[in-house]
Image (cartoon, rainbow, N blue to C red; front, side, top):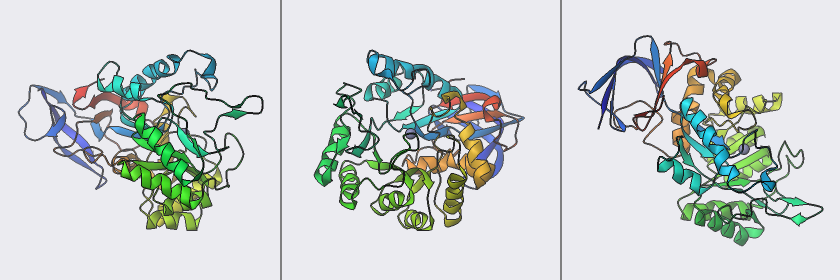
Length: 371
Ligand SMILES: [Zn+2]
């Protein structure tokens, strides 16, 4: 096991929001203590932060691939994720939650070290009721399975029993998270304020997921969908463009996280939702929702969160500690003895977050230096 001493580091204590000046020891795959080391990195003039965590991305959907991948061989989709994962890790993103599109084979390939990338948590597909945004259907064909791939199960259900069965299909195929869509999408332009699950369906999703030690992340734009999802125990609300006071109150009451995904051009309503959530004390975690912008722009989401009212430290916390807490990964998200050595070394010791990508000097994932 290699021990690397990051000498004279200025590192961010994410919880306290303060810069601490001390040496940091990478001891194998965790942060250790002491100064005995095999190698030393001089960290004067830099800032060390925890590895970034993107709680909402789509690594197997790229702008290069487009939405029309159904005419392409199956192998294209996961292979298109290979350069994406490498790009993300090079930008200091050491953990991602994929919000649909990545299959269990991609996760395995990263775990085995066949490809470089962040640790990948997957949801496979977005479960929805008939006509929801995960229901692929055209007037010409009726329902069609764009994946034709047993490793990406059918996400469409109706009724509480159907909801339980949909969760079971996803868990069977290896989902770490259940992704559900309770409203329509801005992209599709319809149903953004509709509530597309009954309370019984939403409850069934959460309770079946919980019995399999999974949590549910819920795509919600309209306030009533977000409120219902929070009341039924969804772990996080994704996007939440049109939140209102009642929705954020329900999120506070039920310890629901908010992943605003501002990279898709935050509208005035969206920014108002972030302010409402902040004022109410809803914990906010970073999620880019890329490829709404190219994956190489992932760190812009941190800038946008800072500008939306979180400030630099709040935005860095959203991308590290808050994200780890949302994902219930208590081994990461801050720089402390015993935590995973997921670390990013930034050029310059200031906390500004407007130019993070150009400041990256080194990235460690699990104690292994990638860049
Ligand atoms: Zn998404």
